Image 1: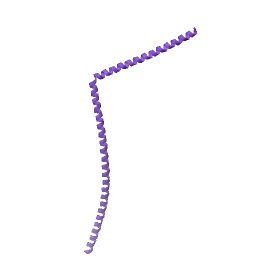
Image 2: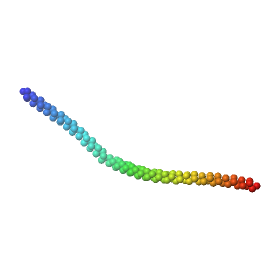
Image 3: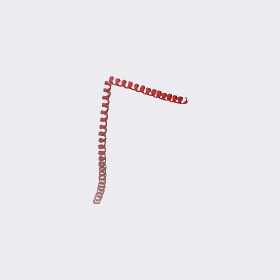
Image 4: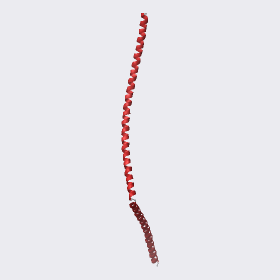
Length: 131
């Protein structure tokens, strides 16, 4: 009898396991059916909103074109900025050269003025000596 009770208990356990598996599969099937219904609903909405979809598609294409245009503009601006920086360096170098040249000319002018004053003083001395 003990063996019979063990078999029965084992059978009961197997039935319980099958019942649990069945419940689990039923729950999974229920979830899958809900997902299928949601998908069908979304497809129906999508087919109903075909015009909206086209508008969204046009908006996306417009945004993509804007992005491409912005990238082109950014590259162009970067290139233009680099050219301007190069020109500024060139102009700065020329200004430094011009400033150096002007300082040399100012020194020459001061020496010339000093010599002119010395000649004038010498001539005044001579004129005073001739009198």
